Image (cartoon, helix red, strand yellow):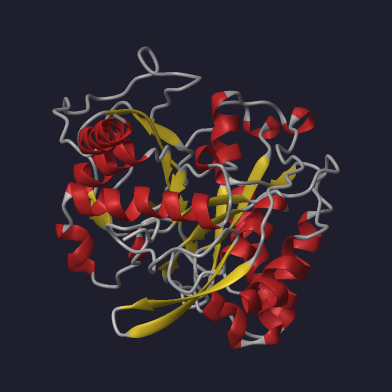
Length: 376
């Protein structure tokens, strides 16, 4: 009898997973207006703050998008984040978009316990544009839901706290991508690029977006409650639009790096105060010691402004749901103490060894697409 019950449970779990991945017939998104979508869980795409600009807090999100390794954590991330506070005295927030390969999940756990948000940057992080443009719904669910499972299991983080996602190479994949998000428990996206002249605030996909689609294919159907946190471009020293410190070729002395960052900040702060995302890559850190020094000096300078807050993307969305003035803003970072019994796992991926640091016992095989928990 016990065997029969076990089989039934496994079948039920399989059916539930297949339901999550099914294709849903959705309505085409209609034009948005404040009369049908305003406040709370529905927002039209707009470059206007939901409150008076003079009262709007300038929200800044530091984002890291590469593998979280021990060296990156101890040399750059920990010194950058730990002990840094906002005007309300609270620890700053940030969002770490975690890809799977080469990531140290003990360090992901450390970042989570520091108060930072952990989000998804897929399992494979495939570098081919065609892979993402042609990916099926099932493949995208494996990439995003699979990485949510991996992060939750091996970094020992509650899966309900992992709700954001970013596409590799910012390759938007139309309705299929957002259907995959809906099936994967992803609540917001930070892949949709906006030009530096189009400083959009976050919005939902209940209705048709007015944000231009410059990379990949953007959604046209309605996805109620799914948020877009636009990735607003910077302008490089050569005048080109760019959206990461590495992509913008930010270099020079520490003073020059700080000055460039301040110029990008001022473009938004002195305009509509749309939320700013600063994307940091491991390659940019390692290019020059002056890069970390310049970024640190810039953040130190921001700390002198009482209306500027470093927060996670999730808190940016929470502010959109309930916009308050800078004087009433409170950083939503709380003490966490998720355990991590760190162990190094030596596993095979095809014909190569992979060394994976885990907070729990090692899996039987290397976690990957179709087998995120490494049980096969």
